[in-house]
Length: 459
Image 1 (cartoon, one colour):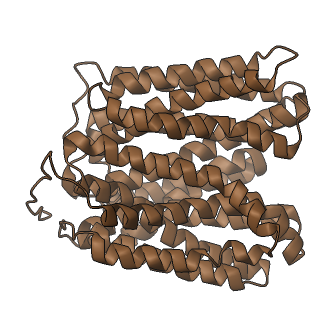
Image 2: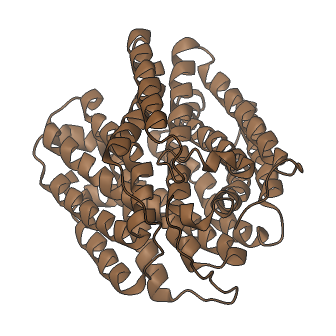
């Protein structure tokens, strides 16, 4: 049986030092900016390397495969060796991957560098929620996770603008070079400012880590392949997912702290929070892929104009997350999540049923409504998910939180691709109505957390 060391909970009056917050959030900024920068710069990178766009997109795919493969193993490593150590190691690996990306001169070299960079990003993403839970007392956790959500939103929103500025005077390699000193600075600040965290002493199983990585890599490939690969390949990868998952489950049977974290899914409140998160991130992934098609193809806006229009959603999200992170101290996350996803459903329904002559203001307030609803869901649901897991399993909970986000976004993007290929004339509207349906489903799941049968958070 794993040894679970005792740990004093932070006092409700405990304050987090500015140096500690800067160290933690600077790492979040660097990691979040990277994927936003690269996604926006794919055409410029393809031109610079002399490769087709369809091949260059693999620098995005390899990143996601690397991240989702190791999130849960790195969360387990954080529990065993300390979240601070894994976070610091992740920043150093990220800096190395950024340097390798900046120096890459071929698509193969850049893909390898992006895979390394993804490993570092996964270490930061898997441990940040657990570190926040260590720093903030349970009653104030919403403020810490709310700040985390705000920082992610700001960094992701700023990505396209930063990319445009850099590419206006420099080559694509300079998208990665600034991340090297920033990641090293974040590591130096974290080394001084982040406290040591408690360790759940148990052996680390490399074979289980490999099985876990295979399971989620094949699962992500299966999801993406529904739209891009033939059904034969989808069946093969789906069978591989099941086989790898079964092998992992058999190997970890009877363990107190399994890497796959099936023990956490025995907590009903936790399970419902994860399902709510996957539903919401599916809606987000779907919306941010299909809305540019709506604006450009059906409403006649340019690519640049469509980008600026979309900003209304994340901008509202950033502002309202500050409010939502305080509301969760007084209102149940289940209620906030239900209201938030219901509002997102209404916003998407208003977007899919636009009048023929709609103004920029008309589009913006509808997008802002979606951002408002998403803010009411995001930080409160993170609080519900992290507080419902025992403290010594915070690393695995953080890994599941990040894994759920990536899986949800992949499902959303795949649904858009499927709808656009299956219904050429009304695929955009069909995808948006699917988003409405998923948002309603997520709201109902969130509401079910209010039932007496749902376990309350363990905090």
